[in-house]
Amino acid sequence: MKSLFVLTLASFAVLSQSVDAASMQRKNEKKLYVGSNSTEALMTFSAVVEYESERTPILRTMKKIVESQIEHTIGPMSVANYSAVPKGDHEISDVQIISKKGNVFSIGYNYKGTIVLENGPKKTYDIVVPVNPAKIYQASFVGDVSPCTDEHYQSEGDFWYFWSPYNEGCKLKKNKDYAIVTANITRFENTKLSYPEYHNLPDENGNITIHVLFGMDDNSKGRNPLNSGDINAENYRAVREHLLSIGYTAKKWTAAEVNKIAKTKDGAAPFVENIQKGNIIYRFFFGPSAIDEDSLAFHWFYKDALENASVMIYGGHSGLGGHLDLDTIEENLGEPIKFDTKRYQILFFDSCTSYKYYNQNYFDRKVTAKDPKGTKMMDIFTNGLSTYFHVMPDSNKAIAIAFDKALGYAKSGNGFVSYQTLAKQIDSDNLFGVNGDEDNAAPKKIK
Image 1: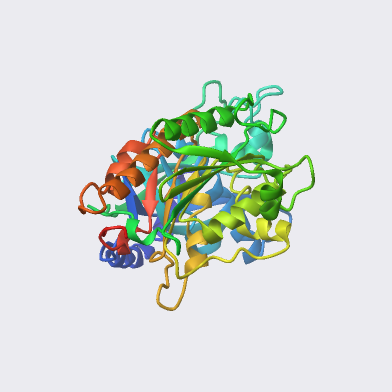
Image 2 (image 1 turned 60 degrees about the horizontal axis):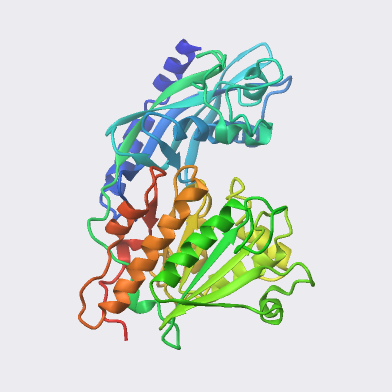
């Protein structure tokens, strides 16, 4: 297997010239990222993946096998000495059969894509790939348990996200079950100083509306966050108490008010409050948000937030990308989510690995002829790694303080909190970052 990887790298040597040219082009682009201890980087590598079949695979099949191997890089990258996560914008090229032994085909390919990477390595980065992604899950078992993945998430569907051959007790063997590929990286310089466009956040009534949606961790727990035993109810109370302590007042929505948006049946209505001070109005939502749960009410409030809020903050599970998948939510609602391409908004996906799941696909909804990347009217906050529930209140408090300062000091033009400061305050060693700030205007007085 080792000699096969050497052969592959040699056979794809011609790629290096085009990669270097692409790297130079990317270096000259204005960058899109803010992070406190990480940067984005262009990652390129050549690799081989095995596929067992009695028939020679067609190109479409080979690409699926390659994508499966690439998907399995996420688990080991998240627990590496220098953690990283791919953005999901990658391109694969030169997919071809390198060799065949019996019914085992070795398929080679080249990879190029963006990652967010913890500060450290500058030119190369080692990644772990399964030799055969279709066999790696079963090969990881010791008896009835796989020590190579999370003890609570043992299913094959979760394996790609949680696995690592370096887990204690994992028996997977290098160059038999998995291989190490040295990738080339070209780091992008982070934005030095940028700000939210505070002055563009107020709506037509002069209000900054911040919709905070708390997705339940366990939907069997109580639905009232003021006394529920759900772990995210504790976060709801912590952020609520902080706002009340600095002068905000809370008002619970009636069932009739909730149902104007949620269109839910009796008994399924979520808990919703307005928490307000002056021109800053928070809307707190608490309820199930998982795509396979009773989440219709969440989807209606999520749609409303994306269409109308100045700032949308989601705190909950990502569901491996499924919970906030726009197409699935729109199918559930039976109508589209209509993003306002003329209004500036901030979205914060405070959930696991949201950098990969909820990034470019959301920017795409803001794209216009004058804004081909969708970044002029939207900034997105994401987490690169798994994120614990207990760190979420600190993130919300940091944002609350930033907006309080923006309004409190707006008349003098001083006191605006930068994205670089927010990144330092919010990051909890989970690769928190901001995309879309590169074309932001300097903050102005809020009228």
